[in-house]
Image (cartoon, rainbow, N blue to C red; front, side, top):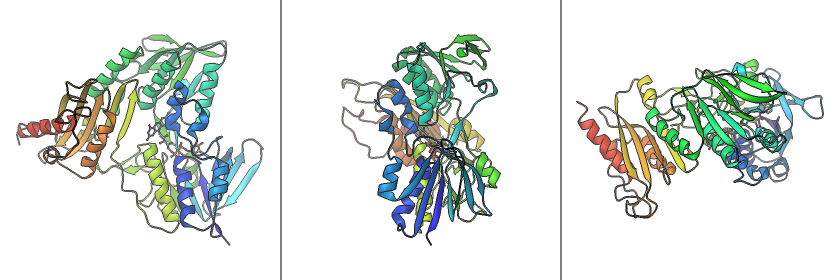
Length: 459
Ligand SMILES: Cc1cc2nc3c(=O)[nH]c(=O)nc-3n(C[C@H](O)[C@H](O)[C@H](O)COP(=O)(O)OP(=O)(O)OC[C@H]3O[C@@H](n4cnc5c(N)ncnc54)[C@H](O)[C@@H]3O)c2cc1C
């Protein structure tokens, strides 16, 4: 009899695991069933801001593979609108509720992939179910927001609460959709994934786009009128709103797994080993936004929910389930984003992370341009490096600039991944031509500055 693999959660991690296992195992050998409570599989949540803004014309473009494709090409059965409500590790079976047809389905498994993702953080004041308030995590959330934006009375004023990357991307999306937008952030700068000095550059640029940046403000409640959102109440007074998007970060979606006995690590996410196996539970794997990953610089387990990790982790789980051998080597937290024309990249540790991990370090800020200064379109770019003292090993890097900035972080990520020192980096053979870089690339200028800072740092 064929073995059965059951997947809980039908997006990046879960469906990568399913597809990879199918590539390695014959159809007669392995039956694969995936349960997804939403309306879509293998969709790009990352694309939601560009769909809401109107840049991507339709939702279907964000769906990489639908259930029919999984059935016909991969012999994977996807049960949409089925929410798994229980996992019994002793009986090796899951129970799912059919959200449309009603009733319950039970499915036994030999291997299980727990890939439930994350859920947007909803503070107490957001939990009252006020109409016009949206978290952003799935395509269903994007659909609900667009329906509201296009309904009557037509919303004109948007407030985004939280200035993380999802918050700033959604602020841009709502601006492009034609709304006036305020972004409220409790900290003094948006983008807490970079250090405050770099976050201030983001704030400055956002103000220039017309987005109202209200930092240092705490949201305390919501006001509604006639059953619809009317204002976001802050410690400095109300901000009128016809629509509110929450960008307060996410939590790993662990409740179902924890109830079944899956272990949770210090970061609050499901613990896994290098092969994405859940320790102490034979045949159970977990991957994606619901798990914690080893940070290769701090050595700590961390919850860094990104699509890039979810796809790789799902693939590793699928290879191992398929009978191959693969490991996930950990993360360094590389991420890029843009807000209007401004690009932001980051990798490794911020100053506060480096302090927390006990490193001694120097930091440098290097101001430069994306192209040769004389070449048309040259725009400013700021590179920040954090280097261990006295070794000179790169610990972290951040870039903010107007164009061709974000993906420059990849060179720094490769250097960091390979434990390079800033001294070694100064000699990196990076490409140069006036349309693409000054003769000393901003990355190299920053590395040279870091070498100088280390020389003057007293060791
Ligand atoms: C607006 C936005 C922009 C983003 N931009 C980027 C970006 O630019 N770069 C990047 O790297 N990452 C980005 N991300 C993050 C990225 O989308 C996630 O890291 C990725 O989707 C995680 O994949 P996952 O499969 O682990 O979880 P998810 O994509 O969350 O999928 C989990 C699935 O499980 C389903 N599920 C949960 N519980 C159950 C249950 N009990 N039964 C059945 N189904 C269940 C959910 O409905 C969901 O579809 C963005 C996210 C958002 C929301």
